[in-house]
Length: 97
Image (tube, rainbow, N blue to C red):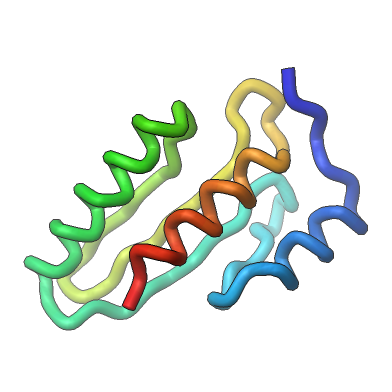
């Protein structure tokens, strides 16, 4: 089982990301909100993220509205942030324009 990250590790890991990921109020998740060109672009991005999630056996919460996508990551098994969340965040960033 993965160990939860401590606050210093979370801050350092957030700084390593290129996008404006934020830590949730409960401090157990990271979240990214993305503005999209259109709904079709969102559907395509969700499918690509879904493929990555399956390949890495780590599944984010995805919420798609008309021109916005919200991505939330946390490790369900430990109900906290782990290295696995930030590894997937880096992979997701490679999909973004």
